[in-house]
Image 1 (spheres, helix red, strand yellow):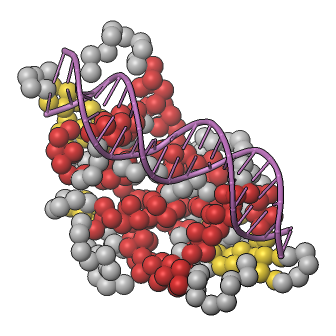
Image 2 (tube, chains in turn blue, brown, cyan, red):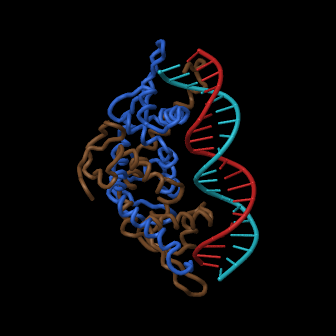
Image 3 (cartoon, chains in turn cyan, green, orange, purple):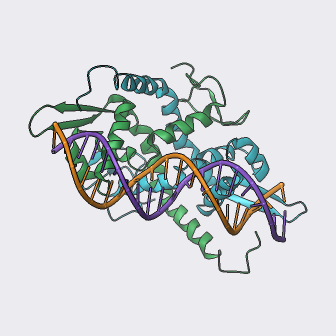
Length: 151
Length: 151
DNA sequence: CGGTATCCTATTCGATACTG
DNA sequence: CAGTATCGAATAGGATACCG
């Protein structure tokens, strides 16, 4: 990595907060964080990617095993998700040319390294889940509760 | 919050890693993490939410100021994003009944608390951005490079 | 068993125009 | 200035059927 401990900015010149892990690194040009956020979202912000890398964190799994574990994912989406993860180097694919075919998927070191920050987010969600639900309920309540809400 | 320092599981009995921040808390029933991940993704996994809370992290901003800063967001999506963030208690909205109208948006403490885990993710993305791009290029290269790829 | 292709639906989001 | 409403394009994602 290039620099460390840089100030993170979203737009033109908007300091967010200093953080000892964020460097401008390679994304040199443009407003850094905005692009980076979009990047990470378009990469693992879809419906299944995080779930899949999570499942592969500890042990490799075959396609069908994954399919059983994910619960709700369609055959099509599992293939597609795995393809993208493989493409990004987060998951490795090993096919054994037997009959019937056997294909094992495993998280790469890079894929496993994703777990730490993701667990941070998951932790946040778990910790504040209640607060959010409460806020949402409150908001939805006086949406049609009191006077014709003047917005 | 309920428990702390629990083992995080994705599916039936799939330990991921122990993490000192993750408790089963309120989401008691079902396979915990799966639901939580879906939760957090459906909340801030969209195109603009993280960007907006990021911009409001340090100082309140008016609607138009935000609109200028986000760059690329449509009028419609900014309103909608702010509505959802307000609904979830991540952002507060204060309208001053003047003419012309003035409305200020600010991150709530809850909204600001989101910054930490998100910066973890952003840091990861920034740090590994190069590796991912490289992997992707390599993958795309021999997609139509060598023999008719037997998948 | 693992993967691809086709079809169809729902959602997301941008553009635009109009209101207080 | 802030917000709403309507429309349409693009995308994501599920169901299904078929191939190796």
